[in-house]
Image (tube, rainbow, N blue to C red; front, side):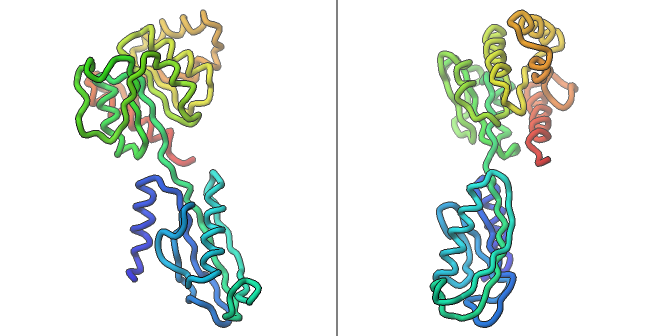
Length: 260
């Protein structure tokens, strides 16, 4: 077996956002099914790659790896397994297994507004390594520009986009850039009220933001709540061209999604 294949498999699982755990034989005493250094990769569904010798030991290891993946944070630990009849093994030795879990999953980026900037940002989904969804109150046929036929992002067309705020995961990154300032305000207000999103951005100028701040204050939002909004969005303000805004905003999103 290619000694580097497990790294390639781990990379593929990371890119697809599939949680997994690596199990490595780190210690052997007496007779054992595999030598130190043998490894396998498991998911919640079972074995993905490799083997540590099969049998009951491997079954126990797969079960333990799946249990580690129930945790939201990465975990690592070593477990000693006596290979006795009690454990369903008759080797008579002892094996130490090291577990390291990778609870990967793709973050959600929800963009309210499927216009020029929204489509340009959604087109960077693979660069962001995120699940991107465009939400718009218009039908797909009404959009200008038209959505690409082949795309690696989702599009949702609903009459009341602001209601979607309550349905998306709490750790989603949310951007507001619809064709209507009134709708922008409604979506933004719902997002602030929910108060869970690590990123809540509004496209627009400083002047637009000043007007929105005043309206949000009139609705009773506090300074602390209003301060959770990023406006203008983007890591830089060098261009108003849609693709430039999208790239700048993507860079800002990557900073937020980066591990602490």
